[in-house]
Image (cartoon, rainbow, N blue to C red; front, side, top):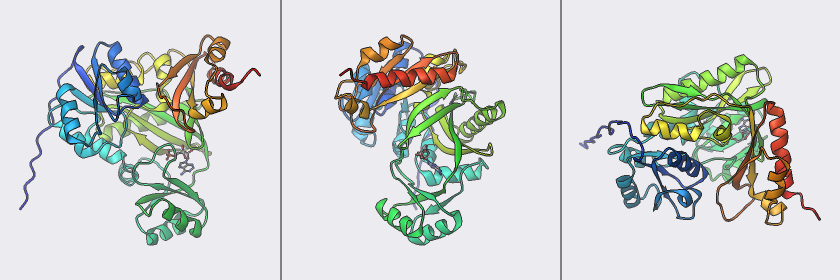
Length: 394
Ligand code: AMP
């Protein structure tokens, strides 16, 4: 008989500056977490694949390695007094291992559920949280059943490691579905009924280890090529939809027992229903505008929750808009976006660049944020500043 012993998780003490906080993952979300932690006086470090990553560039200390590589993880955990992640595809086993000796957030169970679309859908169904119709697809027989039951079109999504529309194919016929499933590698998938949505919304919430939680105002998101293009907050929706989005997001964070920041993406259907599309157990691109627009940003909330400190206020100081800067802009601008034109045309524009050296189509390189008492005008101004980046004066 095999015996398993599960050591209890490390008790969550309150950590105060200059304690060492560590984030697993070197991307822009890790970078902005580190910047928030450093501003508060913490000694913030990262476990990242290279020392060139956006987070490692600004970290006070870093360990180079992959999150599932035990020696790297051991060296990282010997320095970090508490650990968080910037992306959900860290193995739950690695997080469990860290949690034996350090407070580790958002917790392995939250990560394990949200890093796999099948587990996430089952979680939503179990908690009666509204979501799009779906079927599991682990073989061609299930694919045929899914197409027969969901109608057309259907979107096939790989269960593991999908983001920004990667690992997704929209199909209209059974033949297309078979070809699509093959193209996705015949791996376990979720087949989802196509939702004719009126809008895409998201809500960022922060939850402390004592169960206290706050929700940011619901934001309106526009995607282009399945990648977030712009966010406006507050979203121009009625008070009932806004309240429901925040209530659902808080209920999800509670049901997952998540500690830290968690984001829920929704479809708003044409008849006014909210359907959960996706859960991200971390700060989110649609929450970047909280850096300037909120009393406490999503990254500071992540720091506070990790350290066991009281959460901050999620109130907006102003309506705001954010537009992403993708690598395509560099290509359009002949390699050199015109920063002076964008910033000079509107002094209220805040520029964030993530320190990525190589622009590539679809790669998130940075973002612009504009605050304006009129949210629509904030978006128009942010879009105008972005246009100025690639408008060449020839
Ligand atoms: P996801 O990675 O699941 O968030 O999907 C990326 C984007 O694809 C979403 O933001 C939507 O714009 C679109 N999308 C995903 N699933 C559906 C669906 N079931 N119906 C319509 N559009 C979808």
